[in-house]
Each structure stands twice: as structure tokens, then as C-alpha cells.
Length: 251
Image 1 (tube, rainbow, N blue to C red):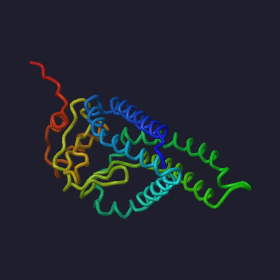
Image 2: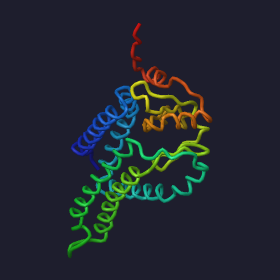
Image 3: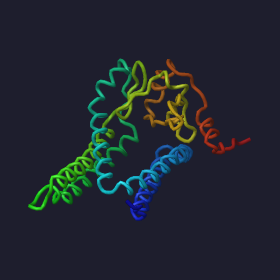
């Protein structure tokens, strides 16, 4: 096995472009401070992407197919298990509905549907025709399933709601227990952007997350969360923790 430098360069280029697009979207939706924080958080994932690209290059074509299979199975299990996991969050107190981030996921999902259709057409020759093999059929089916599971994931994320529940927040098919949240606050750039300070589960876990709340629901959300969490100036704290110079205050 040899290292495929062309594949590694392509993979890292794709990751870099995705980070740039994500930064641009976050800057528009959440403001420059939040966008910079998210970009700094993405740094370790870029390193992980480099390691993954090298590993996949060494593993060859079937290593990538194996990754497709693991990802597809993980996505389907995560989505199917959501109703059971959601019960742990307790009774619904308030449904905020979809946020600006959800709309982005939905548009990405629609784009992924088109991409999945294109990839399905390209991969049909692996599962049909007189020259196909059993291994080729399995490889083609796994790759087709991967692209459709990716589209399904983004569409369902885009159609999900942000909910305040008895034991935590439900968002994007996951829930954040109140016990794992130290405090909450509101961003300086975008006053309707909710910031949560988390108790990290590991050294790579995010310490802060941001959620865009509709302006007309900010007061309701603030009152409900205030019953469970202490409010703090988390925007400044995030900037200091990540080495970002807080904006100077006018005299």
C-alpha cells in the first residue's frame, strides 16, 4: 500500500472549503465573534481530517467503502433511536421551532438530494449489467446508501425544532441535559443568539455552543432557562478562553 498524495490533497481541500463556507454562513447568522470561535473550534477537526485522509489513502478503495458503511449505519441508528432518547429529556415546556441554522441544514439537504441522485446514476453500473461482481454490487449499494443517508440526515436536521424540556434542551436530534450546562448568556454581536457554557465530557468536547433564537421568543426562552441555569457574560468569556481580543468599550 502506498500513500495517494492526490487523494490526500483533494480530501484536505474539500475540508478547507467546507470550513470556509461554514465560517461565511456563521458570520452572517451569528456575527463575526461567533464565527471566529466556531472556526477555532474546527481546527482540531481539520487535523483529524488530515489523519483520516492518510488512513483512507493507505486502506485503498475498500477502506473508504467501509467508512461509508459505518457512517450510514451510524446515521440510521442515531435517527431511529431519537424517540427513545428524547424521552429522557422529560416533558415539553416550550417549542421554539426551527432556527436559522435549521434552514441552512434544510437547504444543504436539498442540495444533497440532487447530489445523491447524481451519484446513484453514476454508481448504477456497479449494481447492474452483465459484468458486475458480488463485491462490486455490495460496494455500489453501500455508496448509494451513504449519499442518500447524508441527504436524509440534513433534511431531517433542517426540519427539526429547538425545544426546551423538563430536563434539558432538545436540538438536532440530540438533547443537552441541564446538569451538563454551567451557565447561559446572550451574544454581544447578535442579541438573540443564546450561548450555553457546557461541562466538557472530554478534552475535545466543545465548551460553548450558540443557538439562534427568534427575536419574538427571546424573553420567553430567557425566563424558562433562568429557572434552571445561572446567567453570565459568556460572550466575553468565550473570547478570552479562545484568545480573541474582546471589543473595546467606548469611554
